[in-house]
Image 1: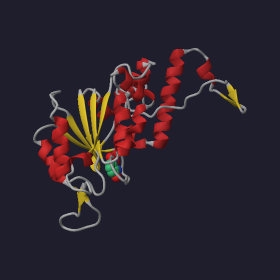
Image 2: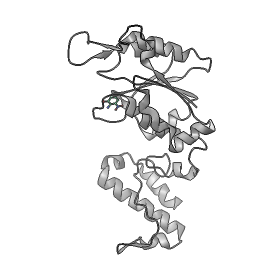
Image 3: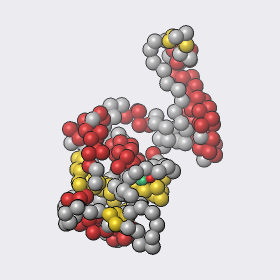
Image 4: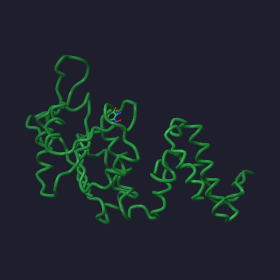
Length: 246
Ligand SMILES: Nc1c(O)cccc1[N+](=O)[O-]
């Protein structure tokens, strides 16, 4: 997968040099290319923003630098990417969206700042390629860079060979199948007793069927406590199927 990221703060993406994503880049599984938006400005101040039409607070990112930057990135002959624009007014970014994006050969991320990018940019490129305006949550960030870090990690870890254990993906919270709409339950490792606290005995039993059922029950318990709304979407048949699976 190729990923292009356009930002006025490309240094935000240093974390993509480390850990799983960093190793995937070294192996060539992931090709991440960073672009400084200001390289497509032509004034001495390398201006990328201006006051909003219609008045109001803050500044809006000008369409000209974005148009030149995206035209330059898209000039590649590597097919047609999806353009992902992180914004609080976008559709929710979920594990399902991450799974869908992980099947794409090329993603381009446009990191807005200030009050956002002039809407004509998304309209312009929406006529040429798929454009997804996506939100990672209902809170205010200073810009899209942090959201792109979240999305690149969520998508990148799903690529073949990035996670050591393929099973880890299937057991993720929100993963399709048996764990869909369920949060992961508690996890434990050695020592068996820590500060007088014992690991649940079932986990030491070696009885895989009972362990799977216990984990399912704990996932249901945690989901009911922390995200009860997810249980509303749980298909009773799937729940029964889970019982048959364990
Ligand atoms: N929430 C937010 C923001 O405030 C600014 C850019 C992107 C996002 N987001 O993706 O959720």
